[in-house]
Length: 438
Image (cartoon, rainbow, N blue to C red; front, top):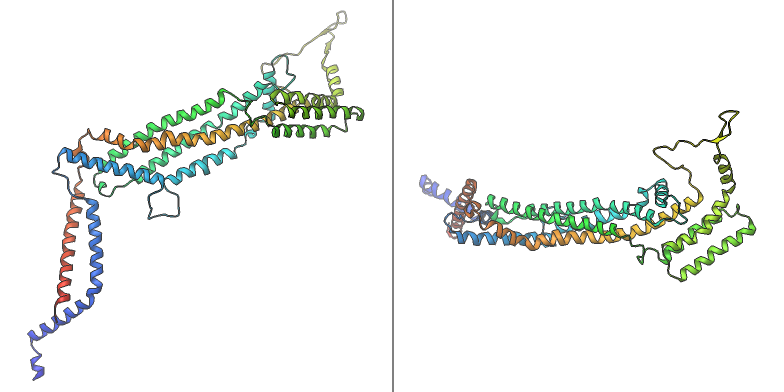
């Protein structure tokens, strides 16, 4: 009898319905978090898509435009200042940190690795000295030779400095591309217009930046300050003196012992007197006079034989005629002999020391001034003027076209709204099932 009461389609339907409700109740704790997660995703997506702006007047469009421009400008500054958190690729430098890398680990490091003396050969230095001496020759190293060579090396700093400005400009363009305002992405025309105006602004900032860098180079080239306190200081003078004394010691076996003592005493006494007074460029030349005499003494016999050999070239034209001198033809391009005299060796070493010391002063100044110029004329200027430039250039345009959405955005917004309605209905049904008695 009990079995008959439980049979039938009606009882079967009731039994199956109770089993289903019990199963749903058991799975509700797992379904509710999933539905809430899907709802949160759809709400964020709908927020990004924003509300339609088809029925707005010009003042409302203008207010929205100013709001987007303000957000964009602020995000540009935050990325440069390092105030933006990046969810992806936390193992690499971003934003302003890349600009710092360009200045310190790329530009300044390259300047410090540059060796000025690698750009000049001893032969080039020797020819520069001879060209600067004029027809009379020079008793001391001519200062014009030093200026000619150091200016050539200072010019080598121009292109790397301009390239540094270009590199920072490219990084700022990357920052602009990474600026994303969530609900502005749907307005492709507005985004393109803002990016275009910002790139024009950065281009306008790049030009004065490069002009300033060129002016920095011209400033260094316009006046070679040999009176700079770090140029001919006591430490540098002592190094030059010690280096030349080492060279004199190598000639000690050649010079007669009786003369050797007198010759070595005089430069030493003069160095002590020089260090006690003001040292300048001509002082180095004066101290080297006696050292040059000793080096020239070594080649005295060779010089005599050279003069005897080259002094008179006699050709017998006829037995009935007198002997006459015949001079060789002067070539169009005059290249001095490759072998340097001991005087020229001293002059070359002195010029090298002067070049290296003065170039370090210029390099230190350029390495400090160029990044400052880039920051002032390009980075900081773009930050300060971006909002003003964007508003002034965009508010007079066709605002309706700027806020025109593409058809795909409208379709996505409608789908999000439908999905949210379905998810809300599902949450409501789960709540009813949870409260229903079996």
